[in-house]
Length: 226
Image 1: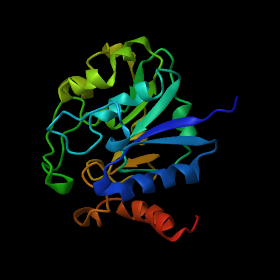
Image 2 (image 1 turned 180 degrees about the horizontal axis):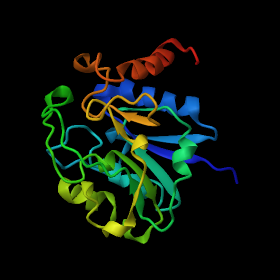
Image 3 (image 1 turned 120 degrees about the horizontal axis):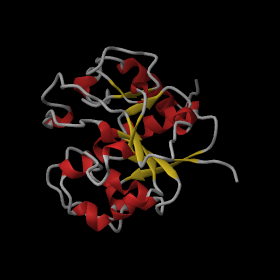
Image 4 (image 1 turned 90 degrees about the vertical axis):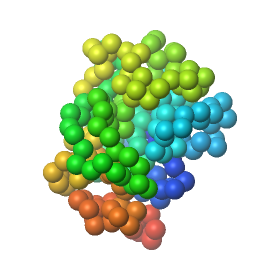
């Protein structure tokens, strides 16, 4: 059977262009087929967003990735405010079956206390770990991640992966979730995360590595390949 990389992508209508631009960047560089699942809240019929502290529409629904994949195989979750500059199969090849999931384990304090759309940007443990997740969907501990369960958990519990032991959380290289503005410019990063604000927002259109985002966006808008 041919291998297909399943990618669950955060979708928020307020920055829908970011979703499409990210998908474009993955497609352009992928060497094998990919399948995208947009986390559009209106599509998630079994999930009702009950949290009131979300800065975007997928801040909690991202933890549905194993459920949406029938608790089988592997999948990638990615925030929509990203650009992939490398073959996503390189990330896929880092799968470690001994881990429940794998993330870039950021350890930093933010440079900005507000981000896009005026949302608060606070420091907290394991900040941005959950923005790019390589999920081992079949891991037995993920069975609890049902829509009802997620609806009733706090952000602290979910974003710190509190249902897992620390040794079950694998490491990914920082280049696979490089935080624009927060980290020094790195045009060679494999995946750039515009965590403070996608350049589609006016306040961030001239920030670090925004030109890379715009180059991909132009190909989405104009229909012109690399």
